[in-house]
Length: 186
Image (cartoon, rainbow, N blue to C red; front, side, top):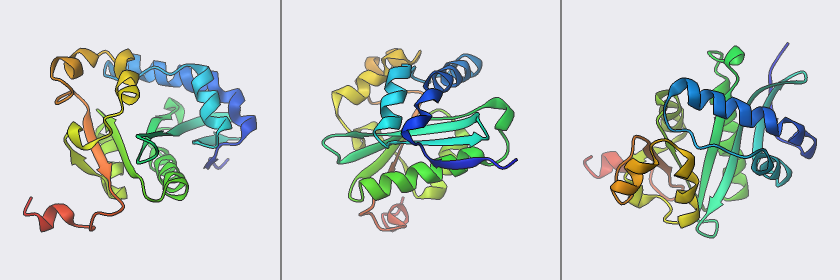
Protein backbone atom coordinates (compact mmCIF):
# COMPACT_ATOMS: atom_id res chain seq x y z
CA UNK A 1 0.00 0.00 0.00
CA UNK A 2 1.28 3.48 -0.88
CA UNK A 3 2.05 6.10 1.72
CA UNK A 4 0.06 9.29 1.23
CA UNK A 5 1.84 12.55 2.09
CA UNK A 6 -0.47 15.56 2.22
CA UNK A 7 -1.52 18.65 4.10
CA UNK A 8 -3.24 17.53 7.27
CA UNK A 9 -7.00 17.95 7.47
CA UNK A 10 -9.00 18.73 10.65
CA UNK A 11 -10.03 15.08 11.01
CA UNK A 12 -6.32 14.17 11.26
CA UNK A 13 -6.29 15.73 14.74
CA UNK A 14 -7.03 12.20 15.99
CA UNK A 15 -3.35 11.43 15.30
CA UNK A 16 -2.06 14.13 17.72
CA UNK A 17 -1.23 11.77 20.58
CA UNK A 18 0.47 9.30 18.24
CA UNK A 19 2.59 12.14 16.80
CA UNK A 20 3.58 13.21 20.32
CA UNK A 21 4.59 9.64 21.21
CA UNK A 22 6.68 9.31 18.03
CA UNK A 23 8.54 12.54 18.85
CA UNK A 24 9.14 11.48 22.48
CA UNK A 25 10.30 8.00 21.45
CA UNK A 26 12.70 9.42 18.87
CA UNK A 27 14.17 11.82 21.43
CA UNK A 28 14.69 8.97 23.88
CA UNK A 29 16.33 6.69 21.30
CA UNK A 30 18.58 9.39 19.83
CA UNK A 31 19.53 10.85 23.19
CA UNK A 32 19.76 14.26 21.54
CA UNK A 33 17.64 17.33 21.60
CA UNK A 34 14.13 17.05 20.30
CA UNK A 35 11.74 19.44 21.96
CA UNK A 36 8.62 17.83 23.40
CA UNK A 37 5.21 18.84 22.09
CA UNK A 38 1.86 18.48 23.79
CA UNK A 39 -0.96 16.71 21.88
CA UNK A 40 -3.08 19.88 22.14
CA UNK A 41 -0.32 21.82 20.37
CA UNK A 42 -0.16 19.22 17.58
CA UNK A 43 -3.97 19.25 17.27
CA UNK A 44 -3.94 23.04 16.96
CA UNK A 45 -1.34 22.91 14.16
CA UNK A 46 -3.49 20.39 12.28
CA UNK A 47 -6.67 22.41 12.75
CA UNK A 48 -4.93 25.65 11.66
CA UNK A 49 -3.88 24.04 8.36
CA UNK A 50 -0.22 24.21 9.37
CA UNK A 51 0.73 20.55 9.28
CA UNK A 52 1.71 17.78 6.90
CA UNK A 53 0.88 14.16 7.58
CA UNK A 54 1.93 10.87 6.03
CA UNK A 55 -0.44 7.94 6.35
CA UNK A 56 -0.68 4.45 5.02
CA UNK A 57 -4.35 3.63 5.21
CA UNK A 58 -5.24 4.55 8.80
CA UNK A 59 -1.66 4.16 10.07
CA UNK A 60 0.40 7.23 10.92
CA UNK A 61 3.69 7.10 9.02
CA UNK A 62 5.06 10.61 9.60
CA UNK A 63 4.37 14.23 10.42
CA UNK A 64 5.69 17.80 10.33
CA UNK A 65 4.17 21.17 11.22
CA UNK A 66 4.89 24.81 10.50
CA UNK A 67 5.07 27.69 12.92
CA UNK A 68 5.42 31.40 12.28
CA UNK A 69 7.62 33.80 14.22
CA UNK A 70 8.40 37.51 14.29
CA UNK A 71 5.01 38.46 12.84
CA UNK A 72 5.29 36.02 9.93
CA UNK A 73 8.76 37.11 8.80
CA UNK A 74 10.13 33.69 9.80
CA UNK A 75 8.60 30.24 9.40
CA UNK A 76 9.92 27.05 10.94
CA UNK A 77 9.20 23.54 9.69
CA UNK A 78 9.30 21.58 12.93
CA UNK A 79 8.49 18.25 14.47
CA UNK A 80 9.55 16.25 11.42
CA UNK A 81 9.10 12.64 12.44
CA UNK A 82 8.81 9.31 10.63
CA UNK A 83 7.60 6.16 12.40
CA UNK A 84 10.43 3.60 12.67
CA UNK A 85 8.70 1.03 10.45
CA UNK A 86 8.48 3.60 7.62
CA UNK A 87 12.06 4.86 7.74
CA UNK A 88 14.63 4.45 4.97
CA UNK A 89 12.03 4.92 2.24
CA UNK A 90 12.58 8.61 1.48
CA UNK A 91 9.51 9.55 3.47
CA UNK A 92 11.17 12.29 5.53
CA UNK A 93 12.20 14.01 2.30
CA UNK A 94 8.64 13.82 0.94
CA UNK A 95 7.16 15.19 4.18
CA UNK A 96 9.73 17.98 4.41
CA UNK A 97 9.16 18.97 0.76
CA UNK A 98 5.39 19.13 1.35
CA UNK A 99 5.92 21.26 4.50
CA UNK A 100 8.32 23.49 2.56
CA UNK A 101 5.75 23.97 -0.23
CA UNK A 102 2.96 24.64 2.29
CA UNK A 103 5.15 27.23 4.04
CA UNK A 104 6.08 28.95 0.77
CA UNK A 105 2.45 29.08 -0.33
CA UNK A 106 1.15 30.45 2.98
CA UNK A 107 4.11 32.78 3.66
CA UNK A 108 5.85 33.51 0.33
CA UNK A 109 7.99 36.37 1.69
CA UNK A 110 9.07 34.64 4.91
CA UNK A 111 12.49 33.23 5.64
CA UNK A 112 12.19 29.51 6.43
CA UNK A 113 14.41 28.11 9.11
CA UNK A 114 15.03 25.15 11.31
CA UNK A 115 17.40 23.91 13.95
CA UNK A 116 18.37 20.27 14.03
CA UNK A 117 20.96 17.76 15.17
CA UNK A 118 19.94 15.32 12.43
CA UNK A 119 22.34 14.91 9.52
CA UNK A 120 19.59 13.52 7.23
CA UNK A 121 17.43 16.59 7.96
CA UNK A 122 20.40 18.85 7.21
CA UNK A 123 20.84 17.10 3.85
CA UNK A 124 17.14 17.47 3.02
CA UNK A 125 17.22 21.14 4.00
CA UNK A 126 20.29 21.70 1.82
CA UNK A 127 18.50 20.12 -1.17
CA UNK A 128 15.60 22.53 -0.60
CA UNK A 129 17.94 25.53 -0.67
CA UNK A 130 18.56 26.08 3.04
CA UNK A 131 22.04 27.04 4.17
CA UNK A 132 23.72 26.72 7.57
CA UNK A 133 23.68 29.98 9.51
CA UNK A 134 24.56 31.34 12.91
CA UNK A 135 21.70 31.54 15.37
CA UNK A 136 21.82 35.35 15.13
CA UNK A 137 20.35 35.03 11.59
CA UNK A 138 17.30 33.19 12.89
CA UNK A 139 14.26 34.67 14.55
CA UNK A 140 14.97 36.41 17.82
CA UNK A 141 11.40 35.82 18.98
CA UNK A 142 11.66 34.79 22.65
CA UNK A 143 8.70 32.42 22.34
CA UNK A 144 10.57 30.36 19.72
CA UNK A 145 13.62 29.97 21.92
CA UNK A 146 11.45 29.09 24.94
CA UNK A 147 10.23 26.14 22.86
CA UNK A 148 13.73 24.72 23.23
CA UNK A 149 13.32 24.48 27.02
CA UNK A 150 12.24 20.84 26.92
CA UNK A 151 15.38 19.89 24.98
CA UNK A 152 18.14 18.25 27.05
CA UNK A 153 20.65 20.63 25.42
CA UNK A 154 18.86 23.83 26.44
CA UNK A 155 21.60 24.60 28.95
CA UNK A 156 24.17 24.78 26.13
CA UNK A 157 22.00 27.29 24.31
CA UNK A 158 21.43 29.48 27.37
CA UNK A 159 25.03 29.24 28.65
CA UNK A 160 26.28 30.66 25.35
CA UNK A 161 23.65 33.43 25.03
CA UNK A 162 22.10 31.55 22.06
CA UNK A 163 25.34 31.63 20.08
CA UNK A 164 26.03 27.88 20.22
CA UNK A 165 24.13 24.65 20.62
CA UNK A 166 24.37 21.06 19.45
CA UNK A 167 21.77 21.96 16.82
CA UNK A 168 22.66 23.49 13.48
CA UNK A 169 20.62 26.47 12.35
CA UNK A 170 19.57 26.43 8.69
CA UNK A 171 17.83 29.17 6.72
CA UNK A 172 16.06 29.48 3.37
CA UNK A 173 15.79 33.11 2.30
CA UNK A 174 13.46 33.57 -0.69
CA UNK A 175 15.20 36.86 -1.50
CA UNK A 176 18.74 35.47 -1.52
CA UNK A 177 20.34 34.57 -4.85
CA UNK A 178 20.59 30.78 -5.35
CA UNK A 179 24.38 30.69 -4.84
CA UNK A 180 24.70 33.55 -2.36
CA UNK A 181 27.42 31.82 -0.32
CA UNK A 182 29.51 31.14 -3.41
CA UNK A 183 29.10 34.76 -4.55
CA UNK A 184 30.35 35.97 -1.19
CA UNK A 185 33.50 33.85 -1.46
CA UNK A 186 32.39 31.52 1.34
